[in-house]
Length: 228
Ligand code: ADP
Image (tube, rainbow, N blue to C red; front, side, top):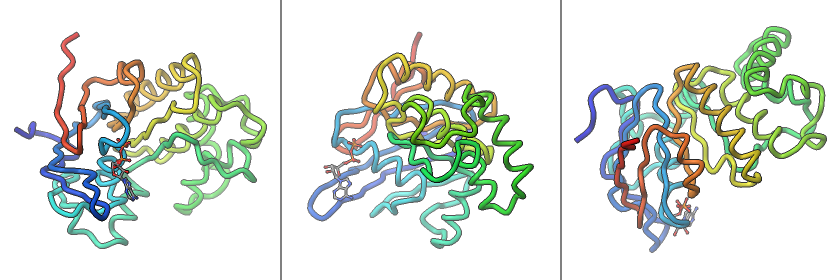
């Protein structure tokens, strides 16, 4: 059963890379403002599910609806516009631009959308304050720690106020203390801005920050409601 009022819904997703099945009938749904952890062992299809949901990789079959619109029916151009305007992304390694300062990195999505430098950087600084990295705005990615880098990456992902934040192992390269701080700040910032979060992780302590868990095994997903 697909819950009513879902923001993003996927049904019966199949995806194979040559002879290797990555998704084999996966289902998924998320509400506005919900934080859902996608869990499961390595190679079970978690990243492929995230890439399909985000319109990066087309599934071989199945449907994905975002706010009632069928994603697979959109042109490449429409899908890329949707990704830029409605979605934010955080990956395991922040993928910050090394030549830019942290503030310039966070402001970059706004600059690419045509916003002038001053207002873009003012908005960037507000997000950096929320992620507690406003003190390193003038530094470049090579001069900061891994935990700071991921918080800058989260600020950059949220700066356009996306409706969905996709995070693929966002703390995978951090020690547990830094990882927990990043998760705390990421989920607080997303919840206060009303963004839904699709969080791929294989770590239970990271998934504990979510409202609900979905477990993927051999490309099939199963939802688990948190009872506590
Ligand atoms: P997880 O994120 O759970 O580790 P993935 O979605 O990355 O799992 O991978 C699922 C399966 O699909 C694995 O067997 C993986 O090797 C395969 N796979 C994923 N991406 C590709 C790709 N680009 N080319 C070939 N095989 C891939």
